[in-house]
Length: 116
Length: 111
Image 1 (cartoon, chains in turn cyan, brown):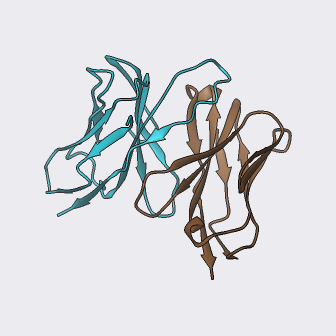
Image 2: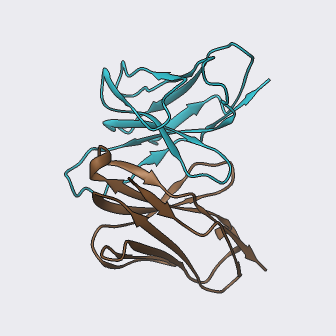
């Protein structure tokens, strides 16, 4: 079955440490996205990529980095510069259709990151 | 700028009908999506509207009025498993065709 796989499900970060969250999709989707979700808030866009070897900052990119070396993979690194990393992180992907495409974003099961 | 509002919480009774509203202000509207999200899980796609009117999918329907910047999700014959958060998201032309998500409405279905 096609889908989006995020790992790990739970992750703990120590002070000054960088951690990387994995996101892999086998849906052959062009675009991939990383969101952060905090309690009582909507999903906020961190980074997105519409093509291999290219990515764009979202609304809250500071303290995060990404790469898109393969179409299937879009890992997110939470750097030590991100002072409040505790949140639920969701990866999504989507087909890029025409202007009026009805293609939704499909989400992975998320990674919950906490500070030790 | 973009702004999406939804009620924070709603409560309804099993078997009843509930309407969850979403109002939005965007500069380049290009479609509205509703998602369901159970606690600690991934959002799952429910419905899509780009033209005015009602879209029906089984127990779930979604309505859009572009002139009013308004949508609602209607859930009929509520079941306990419908207890979840419901997210309204607008695809925005001036935001790289990306999605802007509302804060979500947490629905509790009581027996």
